[in-house]
Length: 233
Image (cartoon, rainbow, N blue to C red; front, side, top):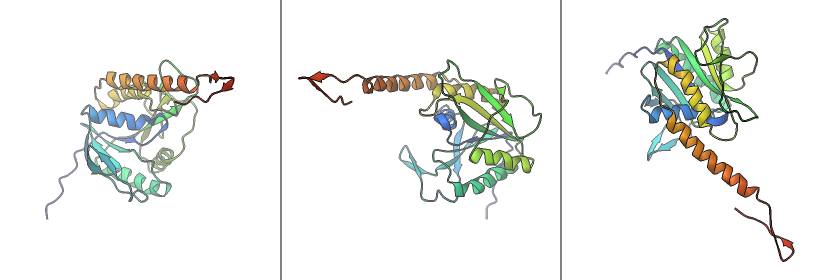
């Protein structure tokens, strides 16, 4: 029986699950498109046995493991079911130990109501007085919920350092500009260099289409022969 080759050590395990603004998934997909990371294998958990993804005609696992030069990334386009949360946290912690990583980095979206010209990236850690993160501001007060919050608290208990990078974003549409700001914060942490111009351009095209559609939907109705007519788009 052939023995499995020992894992090459990685400095970071990066988590890219669904968030508001689809930030984490956007970052993972863009890094893959740019060749910064590559798909290496999948992960099975309870609750997602009946799900699969199709990409370029290939059927793949919904939870994917991507490999970078000095980090591993776990990403999923499907929301993680509640009954699968504990299992996936354990699998991620196993990866942290397997690759002798120094920390786990969680990517999050921080919902905001008012549009801003530039999104701010914040950081928080489950380690008291943790070192600051370049190109990110320390989050003074806030809250986390869901799988990522459970992972951070469990990591604190097991003395596994977990940092969360949160970027301001809109809730309802994939926010490419916010994703680009998050990538800028990741560059120094992960020792990568990424040109985000295409990500921002595609986002602006999408946003322009959405704004045009909104204008059409909000266009006033007109009257014909004294009767108000329905306007359809």
